[in-house]
Length: 99
Image (cartoon, rainbow, N blue to C red):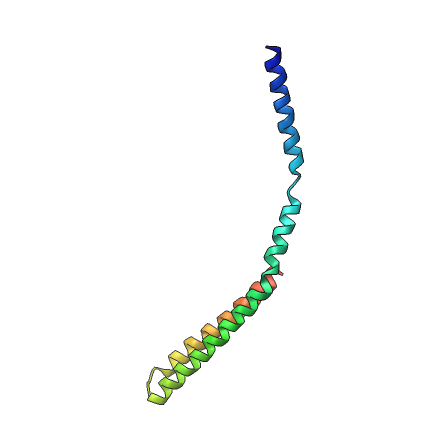
């Protein structure tokens, strides 16, 4: 009976020691934050590049529609231009919000 109590008290003490060894976790949070923020510059540049490619594709499509005399040219131009503006503004706002 005494051996059981001794081993039980030792197990509880070792568990408590292990919990204190974990710390408050702030080092892990700081490391995760620095890892996530290090991806913002390449991601922002990637979004700008995607916006440029979409703008070029949209320009070619609008020119093609305009050259063929399609009456739907204005709507197509507005949608492609809006998509490019959205990508640029979204990247800028996300970058300024998180950094």
